[in-house]
Image (cartoon, rainbow, N blue to C red; front, side, top):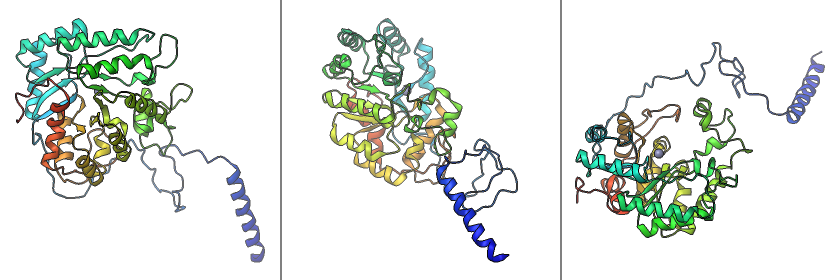
Length: 390
Ligand SMILES: [Zn+2]
């Protein structure tokens, strides 16, 4: 009998592998489902936890250096504190900034026209013009011939009124905003050129958030490293190709626009969504001396590459600015710790962004100063400097 079993078994295996080659890959198991662990043939004897529940306690004991206050004064170039609707709001925000050593907050929930003037009045009435600054904004709705000239005029008026930059230009541009003719408004649309050119003439920076993390454009499967966040937030899924361009299409549109405007100062929010591929951002920096980037909301990518990240920040030390994005005072110290220490394997503040741990980049003081305030002072004319070292 034995003699017969092996050939039959062999044929069966052969048959199965042919079938496997012809079939689509098997569906991925649902969380908690008992199934063999690939590669071992073993299966857990107790139901496995889902990715939402598995929070192992680290037993690693290494030196810890929590940093509650930044080593040098900071300009937050990507601030979204509450709207400065009254002097009290401004005072409250500044009271939260001071213990963190944030000297200047740039309000990048920009305001234009009469709203901008009332925000600036509130800042002046609070006596805090040295601590907060305003950027202006522009609406990209209904872009049609003549839009660019009108937007440029409004920008000039807002800069005269006291706005120090334009932005944050939000992710809708390129992803959701439609032109008057019903087509998708691309960031390199010629109708927008007069706006970018006006910023060069007025010597103000443009703060641009274009696109979203690369994985948000990929299928929501179990190999997507942003699975949790995409599963939690429907509006962060841009993987429907019938509705959205690919990540690379968006980036190509952005790069074409940047090339067309070498005299305009640009700051890419969120490291241009290349914090997971710094060499790609480096190539862009090499091509475009007018280009800068800020670190808001991408600490999870910087803190997982402390050595490559360190070298990148040293090499491009004149091009990277500090920004935080959402105004949560208790989250800033995570940034200080990643930038200033050599700590290992510590938690990030938002585990649905990153299920991994962070490491300190241990940046030199000279680089920290540029990141924290010197680059901002250099590229944002009129930024208040009274509280900053000379
Ligand atoms: Zn923002």
